[in-house]
Length: 274
DNA sequence: AGTATCTCCTGCGTGC
DNA sequence: TGCACGCAGGAGATAC
Image (tube, rainbow, N blue to C red; front, side, top):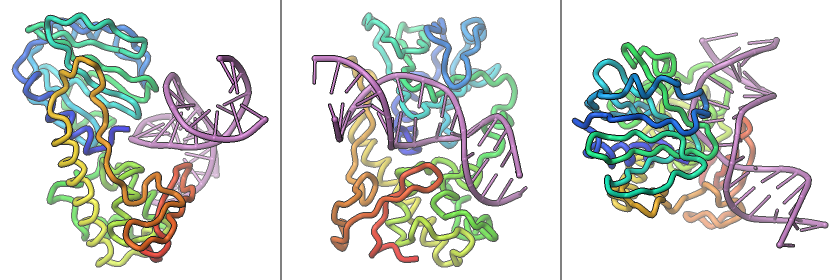
């Protein structure tokens, strides 16, 4: 499940292969993603030169001059770069190939189809999917003060609020759990009850958690031309995520698992007090 | 505006 | 070995 760190690493991995290249063709094999891939995408993209490749939240943005291609990997999406000479047959979940002018293919696979490939004609930041997004967690714009301000009066749990992309982008279930552990805050704490100090601490924990994950990913995969196919998401040692019943790595207490908003939360009842 | 619930989808693990 | 089932999850849509 690509979260922000995975998307960031993927972005870094594909940038040098894409920037400055022209798109020779877009082959749509299966348009059924979260939203259907535009049937005329090939006509739109053919000949377009890819400018900057950037990330906003979990969206990957390919600037194509006359517009922007928006990619989202959803839950199970992956991108692979197939070297020019290879003829890797497309699998049943390979939705789109972007063929570059040097023959390299950028292939989007997404078995669960929660991902997206959309064309934004005008200012991409004004696109409905991007316009309402909160700050990037790894920038100076995301501060304890901001989180404090944005959580006042909120009765929803801090865990659910963290996963709201209008508050801050890129914090999914895994890293929400991990960051709350690092900050020593119980996931069930009502967001509005957090004081300024704990907001500060939580923001710091989010930044560190995401940073470490990016470092782990950046070192474990450097290229997406892996012809064997699996770019894979990096495996990390989690403090609490997926560790229900196992001993807390810090104090040994059994990790608890609860449901919050249809999602699993994991926490250490000793290290994360209310 | 904030909150709660539903929804999309397939692969995998579990229990029988 | 095979089947039914529950679960996983990003985030938009919908209804209060």
